[in-house]
Image (cartoon, rainbow, N blue to C red; front, side, top):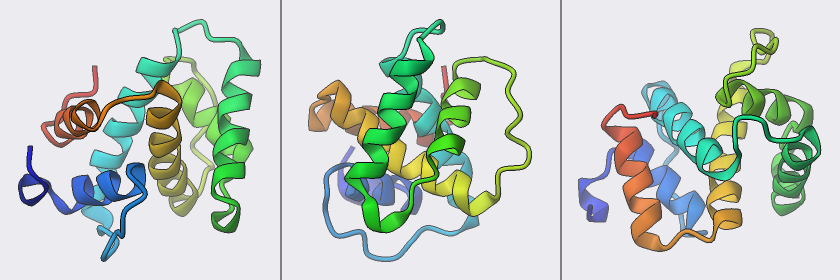
Length: 133
């Protein structure tokens, strides 16, 4: 998928994951793509029974990677656990925090996984196509 083929949400995810200039932030319509990309990255990074220490380490690492953006670590842990199928209380997490976690943790997880540009592009394309499994 070329850069021009990506949706605004996909372009934003790509820019964040590759540490490139992002241009404008995608709007509210981007949230489902962000959520699917995050879920895909989480499931690649962690097994369903991942220990909480591993999840906490990834969330804390993302917060250290983006200190000026205030990654909400506890919320990130909860959203990771939810993406792994655990029933956790995430309903009270404010939408801006959810978006922050989805985008920044996506970038951190693809970095942890050591994905190639082609693999990141495919993950984003899957999220844009509505695939989250």
